[in-house]
Amino acid sequence: MTNNINLNDVVIRTTLRPGDIGYVTWMHGVLYREEHNFGVIFEAYVASGLYEFYKNYNPEKDCVWVAEYNGKIVGFLLLMHRGDDTAQLRYFILDPAYRGIGLGKKLVGMYMDFLKERNYKKCYLWTTNEQFTAAGIYKKLGFTLTEEVDSTAFGKPLKEQRYDLLLH
Image 1 (cartoon, rainbow, N blue to C red):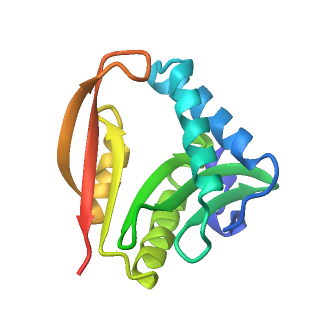
Image 2: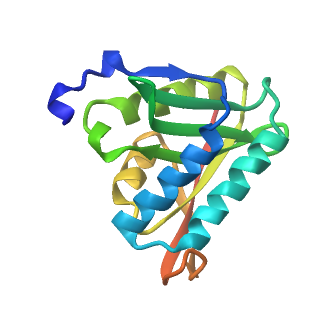
């Protein structure tokens, strides 16, 4: 399917609309079950985090990037403030049919631009040891692995990993 998809046909908006929180939660639940055998607890974790983002949303400090193709969400990423100078990268996801067209690179580029525009000094994210491709993207952006803990929080044994980025 990616052969027929052009990155220029993907629209990226920075506002949440009704249905987005539910759809992005659903995307995470289905995709992480299919690709990593995560349990329902992971979907609940995502739902809780998206609600936290919405509840504490500050347009001066927070942003979402919702990628749509023909009106369907195919990618998502958000920046959540964590204090005055620290941001958290959360819920970066791409529909598998839209990988490999440069969409992920475009979303994280927009994320990094916003991070710098808002003068954040630090940024972090949590992922798992199974997210090889995502970890590679984060490392290219300058994030470094700073913490690793054994976990069964998502319905199976794995290592949760924290990556940090210091901005100058």
